[in-house]
Every structure is written in C-alpha cells, then in structure tokens.
Amino acid sequence: MPRRFRGGLAALCILSTLVAATACAEDPTSSGGGADSDTIKVGILHSLSGTMAISEVTVRDAELLAIEEINAAGGVLGKQIEPVVEDGASDWPTFAEKAQKLISQDKVATVFGGWTSASRKAMLPVFERNKALLWYPVQYEGLESSPYIFYTGATTNQQIVPGLDYLKEQGHQTIFLVGSDYVFPRTANKIIKAYAEANGMQVVGEEYTPLGHTEYSTVVNKLQQAKPDAVFNTLNGDSNVAFFKQLTSAGITADTMPTVSVSVAEEEVVGIGPENVAGHLVAWNYYQTTEGERNTAFVEAFKAKYGAEKVTSDPMEAGYNAVYLWAAAVEAAGTTEVEAVKEAAGGISIDAPEGKVTIDGDNQHVYKTARIGVVQPDGQIQEVWNSGEPIKPDPYLTGYDWAEGLS
Image (tube, rainbow, N blue to C red; front, side, top):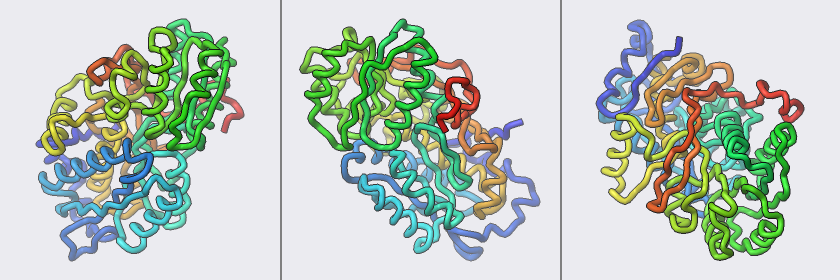
C-alpha cells in the first residue's frame, strides 16, 4: 500500500510520522550537511533568464515556497532546508555546469530543476556520474528513466495520450504538429504520429522552429493551407507568445482551428494575453481552478508570498510537490543519503494541490490524474475532462501496442 503524506501548511507536522522510531534515531549525515550542521542544502536550478524564464521563474518560486513551509513546520530530520539557487539561463550546457557546481562545490543533498528535455538530458549524465539526485518537475516526452532522477511532471501516457484521446473523441481526424526544435517536441511528435496511424487520424503537417523564435507567418500560412481539424502544439517558452498572437492576427480562432498545447499553462497565458488564446485547449494534470481544499490553501499561500496577481500552474505545482515528496522520502529514510532516499521513496503518497500523487518505485515517476482544459477570457483554465483517478506512469508506453519500437 502507498504511504500517505498530506503535504503542506499545518499538515507538515505529520512528516515525522512517516519515520519509524529506529529510523529517527539514525545519524542523518550524508550530503547536504553533516551531523553538526543545522541545515540541509538543496539546489534549485532553473532558467531565470533567457527564453525559458517566462516558464521557469515561477517553478523556482513554488519550490522556495515549499521549502519555506517545511522549514516553518520544523524542517526535515529536525534541520532547516537551505536552498542554493542557480540560473540555467536557458542554455543546456549551463544546466550541466551548474548541476556539477551544486553537487561538488555546494554539496547539496538533492537538486530540484530543469524544464526542457534538453536541459534534463544535459544534466542526466552529471547526476548519474556523481550518483546524485535530481527532481525534475515538468511534463516530458517519456521514453526515459534514470536511477538518479525523480520525474514529478507527467509522462506521455498522463498528458499527450489523453490529449490525443480527447481530440479523437471530439471528432478531430486531421492534426497539424507545431513544435520547438529540440528533443521534447520531436520525440512527442514521433509518438503522436504513431498514435494517429493506429487511431484513424492523419497528420497533415509538421513544423519546427528554434527556441525563442518569434516569426510564425510561414507556419500560419501552412496552417491556413492545410486546414487541419486541430493543431497539436509543443512550442516552449516565449515562442508561444508570438505564435498565438500571429494566429489571432490571421483570423485563426479556437472555433475555426482549435489548438491543444502541452506547454502553455496559466503563467504562459498571462504572457500571451488571454485574448489571443481563449477557447484553445491545454492538457495538464493541474490548474489553478482545480477543486479541493488543498489547492485552495496552496493558491492562497502562493499569492500571499508573491502577489495577488500571480497565478499557479502545473509545472510549478509539480515542482512544489517535488520538494514535499523528497522531504517525505528523507523522513522515511532517516537520512539524506541518496541510495537510502531512493529506496524509501517508492510508494510514498502526498495529498497535493492536484490531488493524490504517489511515487512509482519501479520507474521513479508519479501517479497523476490527467486533465484537459479550455483557456478562459480571464486567463484561467476550465477543466472539461479528467481521467477520474491517478494514472500509473508508463514512460515507455509498454501498455500500448501502437507504441512498439518507439523506444
């Protein structure tokens, strides 16, 4: 049975109940602080500058909020968490460089970081070589698992496949693929094409642009010529601002050509302008409007710390969850030692803002509920479908015959 932890706010006090009395007596000396230290250092590594800052700054903010809440409730293993914040600068080699600094120079117990799959893949060998631990908070294309990464965002069967299922159920038979030119969109679109072929759908176009690209007139012209039933959008960062504004300028609306996005959440909607994206679809696992007392408390705490005008979103909620899941695993292990934390993490469950999430000990992903939403004129997202219960993570899509050979 999964171990339950109701994370956050006043409920943090029950962290200690996860740990047996004998484990509590252990000497928690490994990385991130010795026996005589009253703090445990953790790394926070996101793009605070460059094209991805539009998305990643709030993930950092959410992780810092979680750390603040945990510290206010007594910390982890009786120690305060000390964040060491670094800027990946939207540059994949910089992510690898800063990850190595956090591990070898700052001697952090773990790192929370990344957004793009390019940043994750740049960091992956660093963490594996050092046998250090990364908590990666963003949905991604799947077809990966690392013994030194915990994936708290959705994998393919928890976001992209439900998004495609929804399009199919709505009668959309032709789709056009638009994405940024790096590993996540290209791998995701390979999966989408395999799904389409197996499900009687047709891909009528596929276009990629560099991260940070802002000229979409050619892509828009191709969309107008192809006239797809829907667009599947895997653009990342501030390219989404230019893309949706130029769609609107060309007279393409959600009524005439709906777009389903997997990297546009509330934070990006603010940057795009709700008037340019209202009515279009998104596929995530969490929205600011997700019902539940836990989410109400989370949204209130985030706005209280960062401003009433701020919004919450799926990736930053997954980053927030990552801190709580790590803290629960450390309490269960009785130490910050990486191998012990990994061993203790499997089956740990928290009541997160999105609902129940549980770590799958086999692949270090989490069970998550899939949700399809429609962007509203006020910038919020209205849920129109959900999976009803958390979906077991299947990063290699082993449960789908049409996915054979993709990995």
